[in-house]
Image 1: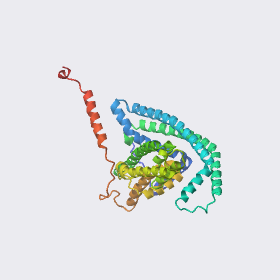
Image 2 (image 1 turned 90 degrees about the vertical axis):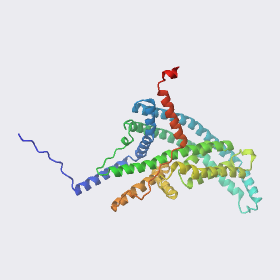
Image 3 (image 1 turned 60 degrees about the vertical axis):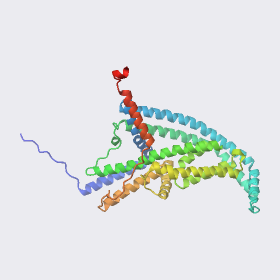
Image 4 (image 1 turned 90 degrees about the horizontal axis):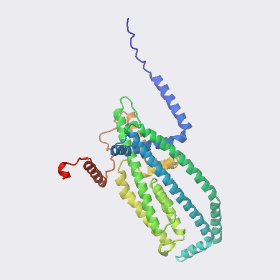
Length: 406
């Protein structure tokens, strides 16, 4: 009896590969168009899984629990924290909106008096205001304010609907991220697996570069965002600025948008502080506004020139002007999320584009003279705390000797 010879699988020709590749591209494009609303939540779920991997690994080592148990505890804490923040933040937001409505209504009633005071203050500095029609300006502002109050009800209902939609998508992101992280087996490479024959080195190098980009941005920018919100909230609360919560959050989000973000933040602070009734130490409106404006300028300069370079290092390598243009384009495509991730997305496209271009011209995609990206330096304080914690754990696990017991 003769054995049947093993038949090799036939190789695909160039035409077959081209047809298969084009078919695959068409199918992927159709799926992206059909399910475009799910792309961003899925993208955020993978990012969340990537960021939480070190936390789950640390908890698994410290508590000696299984990987899935550690991941489950982390996500349970996230859900509890999220529900608490939504409850407290919702109450604070409703109160801030109610104060805003009362503020607009009060200033509408006193608008003619405010305009007279402003024009009187301007005339003391030699500004000619005779060409302005005070009554016409007052009528236009009153009409605008009344329309604003009339649309406030629909605005509140829109906020309520958006909050419910946001909560639903947040739970979806957490659920997908939980399953992705739990099934990764404790390996960060297990979150996304790509294996192409002959491209192991290139994929590894791309993964390292992309890891530096996204780690530096996400972790660094999240740290900067929370520090900005905390610092602004403390400063604005001490100065007695109204809507401190909303203005602090706006200042935090302004860090994601170069040039324009801080300018919008400063403008909002100037408008609120100039027209609010309370002024610190009964200062003049202009001086009080200048005080808040100068402090905000100092805070932003500290973040731009001292804190951000230390946290972000040179992992992104993108020009702020290019980030601004990318944020405008991303906002039209992805909304607020596009503004937030504009910088790392631009750095990612720049990295992939440079790799593709050099491969097209048969050049080395990783030239030896090219300076590699560097990760932010670890804090000395955190390193000392890590050493202290390891020594404490070592002392707790060591068994006491007979001499120590005596």
